[in-house]
Image (cartoon, rainbow, N blue to C red; front, side, top):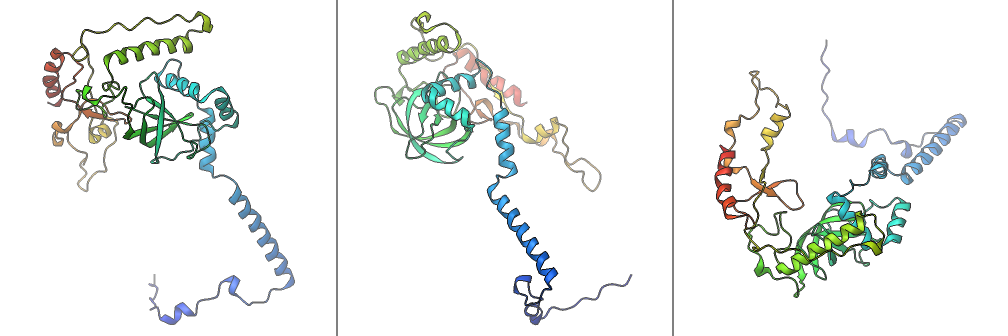
Length: 325
């Protein structure tokens, strides 16, 4: 087959290109004018329809949200949602449901804002109403490690039904009657998801747990309000630290081993051998062993848990070493 001859490009080639249709002065015959007009009209209508119709991606997302079932009764998501609905009020909740906007957050991921904590959920997290100067839509933000009446700065990282989830950036105006950071004994507090109340007095912690029982009767007993029993004071532990007799540390496999466990192998090299990472090449000392990071699906390395008994902490070190061997 004969090779195509190459042609050098000259500056004149760019200036002598054939003109675009809109720049052309060619004369159209009557029949051609009719066809061109019909084509132009059709394109204009199609362009208008594309401009006003939502994208397929957005429409698919909304359909998926409408089909999303409610959380399992009694789950942590269900308990949080009940607290959110109680704060927003029945009227606002029903309006969002009727309009199909209960998943449409007025906030964007990564957005930072200042909010005032309205109350604590039964899960121990702060529930905050979105300020009216940010959005007029009834919506809440869930922020960890905060207390009622505190003004805090947070960063949104996820959305759910009637609320967004956010990380705590800063406590701007702490609640002086409740917060005392000198009570915190754990160096992982504020990152680890295990504890939320260490900055509170022990008596306040006990009272919050009693209120959780009260709300459980409201949400799950099925009894009329006048039959709700009054929860008795929470029985205190003789120890506020070092009292737990069971802990369950976790660890995540390195990404290389996770892919190998799923059966995903890397592409073979030119010599036909498997290029996937060998287990002996992984530094086991870098694998975090501990508890979940708040708001993230990953484990943080925990060398000591201050609420665990001395016996458990003594055994934790050797257990961590055994896992890494």
